Image (cartoon, rainbow, N blue to C red; front, side, top):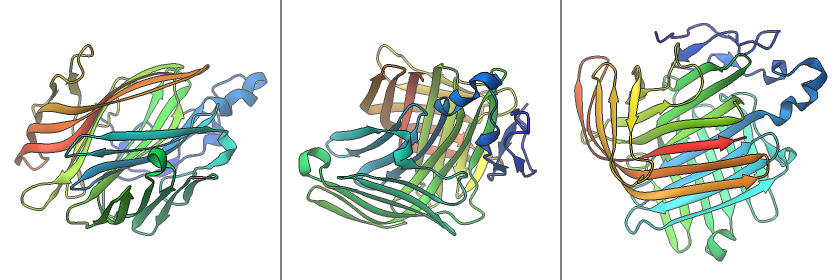
Length: 345
């Protein structure tokens, strides 16, 4: 049973338990992480080390994929930027590990600024009325080729997003907002290549996460944001593998800014050969997709108490989805991502 939330409240009650569990089309919960209480009082001072927070922006242009993240993992903060050329499949990624106090992340996804500023890198993410602004300036990226982004993602008030809050075990939890299909404009310069972005051909997404996971965690995630031949925007957000999903999952198709909620989605893939085709089907026969990868991104971290391995595949989705209104929408050559993530954190 999928529980749709409609009432605003705090995320956590006074005793640290979740005030509500379910999914919503808009962010309804105040992320009062200061009320977290998953350790006994004598160990409460250790809690900040276990709370995870991140803001992850992704941009799809006609020429490339670009992504920037500020993440506070409790023990340390992780900053990373990567970009993929769709024509020659050249992928370049760089990251920094910095002390947690070096980054700023807002309380909620609806306002405020995320910021990291170091000697050779500045990343800033701002929410301004009906738009979200991403600025990245990293002159030393890729041995001095440099990357600079000034991107505005348009997100009108009525634009729906996937918001879920679920328990993980008895005292841990995950609160997440994913916004797909935000038309993007601005500029993206990478080396000698300079793109002027048009909202008719460039589009982006946000993955905003806050919570406390089990130390050993696993999940799958699939995402895409693009345009249909008729000009409508189309997005996918599919996930599984962590927490108690009995009352809420994050599976949805996004059409012109409207969430079309799905129940359980099955990920079928070969983790001995991630480049082989993946298949996605749902429990209500509203989605059937074949995902054919063309590039594998492997990201590994090993920082003593933090250890993670991500296999993020870039590829094409083909198949069909059915909207809430019964419209069957064919999907052909939709560029997107699908991943497996294992972590000890």
